[in-house]
Amino acid sequence: MLSILIPVYNASEWLERCLDSIVSKSEFMDFVRVICINDGSKDDSLDILERYKKEYRNMEVVSRENCGIGATRNELLRLVSTPFFWFVDADDFISNDAFAKIIPLLQQDKYDMLMMGYFWGDAAGEGKCVLYGGKEYTSGIELSDQGIFNNSLWTRVFRTSIARNHHVEFKNYQMGEDFDFIFKMTPHLGMVRCINHVLYHYIVNPDSAITAPSMEHKLRASEHSLMCMEENFTSLSSYPENVQRVMRKPLNHFLMGYLYSVYVVHFTLKYKRDAFRRLRKVSAIPFFPLPEEKKKKWFLRIVNIGFLRNISLFMDNIYLRVKNG
Image 1 (spheres, rainbow, N blue to C red):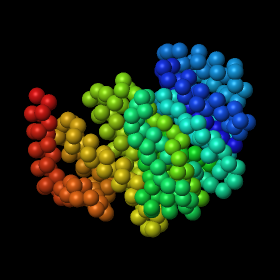
Image 2: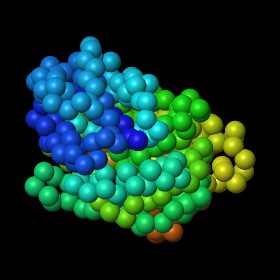
Image 3: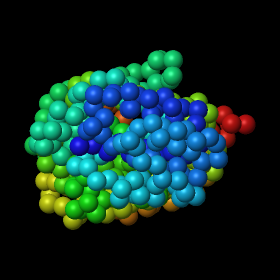
């Protein structure tokens, strides 16, 4: 019924925890296939994968030179032969009752996507749980219209034929690739079900490039986020007006996080102004509709008015220079 897709790159420290959380559910293993791609790891990841492959018959391992996360996910998708797939990160793990909640719903053959609750925190269990209720929705559009969306690929189990029939693939972005894939899948989804249980554990790695990024990493992530928004804001015009209205909601959610990063990261003033020029060109700015929360509303009013935006960017850069010495 279900393929678990795991891209692996230098994950030996956490990989056994991830795989054990999956293969330990022996009563469900007849319904599950595990596919891992070792993306040119330099540590012991491949040795761990080969050891598990020998023990579990439903596991497939591919190893090759490093190609990046986007290419690896696309290759994993091409290897899927089951009706549904679920991407799991090698440094995370799934809950003990994950398959008990998911498999019976997949057997109904009713839903194009399942969306689950998750834990976000550290390995010691400090963090937060996020739940989306236990309702079902007639489509991905209805789900988004209710304000239920995030940028996390691992919160979702998808029907394979939707991605295949509509040629949805991953871009090789450093930031925004999950959002881009989810965004492109959403208009094509029929029935969707939210599972009101924490089934996934996202573990923050304090040593990763994401949690302690260099300026080069920040700049590349910002540029890829901007490219993602340029493409997807441009694509809005291809949808009917009612769909455009709904699809702008997750886009605005992604855009809001990007706008915040433009102000708090010490990019050059030229880069920041150019980013806003590009966003205006694809009608991402002015930002609409404005949110109800007062702080966000006032921030976006400043962003929407050109001379106020330029003044605020200039003052913000002076503040960042003083702050960073």
